[in-house]
Image (cartoon, rainbow, N blue to C red; front, side):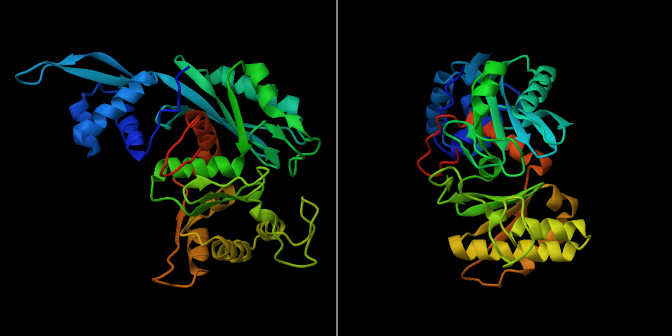
Amino acid sequence: MADLGFLRGYNDAVILGLARGGEPLTRMDLAERGGLTPQAVSKIVARLINAGVLEAVGTRNVGVGKPRNLLRLVPAAAFGVHVERDELRVVLVDLAGTVVDRLVTPLPPGFSPLELVSVLADAVADMRPAERLLGVGVGIVGPLDHRTGVVHDATGLPGWHDVPLRDLVTSRLGVPVHVDKDTNAAVVAEAWHRGPDFRHAAVIFAGTGLGAGLLLDGRVHRGARSGAGEFGHTTIQLAGPVCVCGRHGCVEVLHNQALTSGDLTQAINVLGTATVDLVRLLDLDHIVLSGRSVLAAPDQYLTGIRAGFPHSDRLPVEVSLTVHGPDLVATGAAMLVLNAGLSVPSATIG
């Protein structure tokens, strides 16, 4: 398996993106198309070859002088999994983080950990790539410990108490497995795509649950116990309706109740109020909206959330939609595999 601790920054991702096209390229091709210096490209390429990510596949004659080596991406892939409370989404990504295949399947009500692993194993068997499989990343609702892969009392999943999910999936599939909160996987995916300027941000995920993935000073913020980002379980209405977490008046229950009653405007107002509070608390400059509720009415959510922020030239806040659509969490979960061992001085996104 390749050592994926090779990434040193955004320029490395640029080279991977160019190599992903499949056309063998020379170092000079990579420099010209990526807007990088030949010296920088030579250093990056050497690291990628040593990591087993790029390989030489021949030469090309270019005028007078020694033929130039042609390089291509070594075929390899990773699976990303998003566990919702009612469905399983599995994507297959290449080394550049691009989705090349996907499968979505319903999950039975009140599914057990073993039922989930069985459904996942069937999906992976159907989609198994011909090239090297680097591992599987799983994004699921917390609370959980991403370091051990143990899910603790997952909100809205009855019977999920101290489940060693990473070990269960590893035992069944026989490959390295990474487990993280769905919202953390979401912000990893957005950071991978948006580059080094995406540093003080939150990805608001409104699916069957509601949470936020946090990127603070370029780093995914998980908190002391992997519990950061429980945005949906902050109280905004004292003595409000009971939430699935057992508390009253949470953002999640108020937002979902408004949607269930058909009041989209109220749902957006609830989410917008909480989002402004989050920005003020953490001094964020970018909010990304995502999840099935948002994707069902993207223009309304985007307009409504933007309208809630005061107009300020000094403290601007960009509000945008996810670039990954419904594959967001699953894609980010796969990138947890690609980011294994990642150490980037300017922006650690893994």
